[in-house]
Length: 358
Image: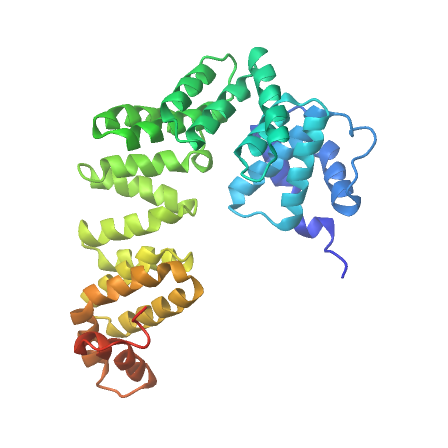
């Protein structure tokens, strides 16, 4: 089976030019698009650029940006991104070498010999003051659970000159996240870091900072938290849909808006959005929607077994509401009503359930 044409799978020239502008690159799309096409069609880099590590790494970064913007990456683009990272590292791009070292040292399947080689390369880069390597060591320490050592390396990274805003923002966000989770006393420090991040980074590059700020403000400034969560939702940030739905439902008492946010969250299989949607629909006395939500939860538990116990607990805690749904829907003996009876009767009677006793 022949693969699709390059133009069908690759981002538009306009998007590539926009990303190159954001990266402050002198290289144009006219230069790199033919290279991408050559890699896609024959897995080869034109001779003129096959040894140019910096251009190849730039192309890798462009694909990274595309992945962030679209929240999706097709198999051909993922292959190209990985291919370009290896090729640019092999041709002297220090940034690519540092990122490759991270991949090797963070992998559980890499051999000890390869890890020793990666450690040596990373130490050499740090010795020569390579900025990204300081961040990589911070990331590795954080991955290993040593947040204190991670913070030490992140702060060393921030001391380096001429840092790109996106990288600086990424590290500040990680410092903020560590402070946020460490202790309630550190919340103010975390807030300052997140505020600094959203000043220097585009929304798509720092959506976590918006989300954490919303969590900080949600108790004493719900309106500000709402605005921040709405921004997160525009980027498809999964965790934001349930938070915004519950905020609309429990604080603003706008059950219809809450329904809308929960519904979007259900589309990305955020399980708590199913629970919120059921509760909002019940309050609005939309019992058929409650019933459909229960059926969707049943389907979800089949698709992902990890949700079984979670959904079972919800059904147990909502036994009275589910019984009410059954009674309200029983006016017309439709197929849906029979489904509801099968779902809820075991709960209300205390007998074992064949559908919900997960």
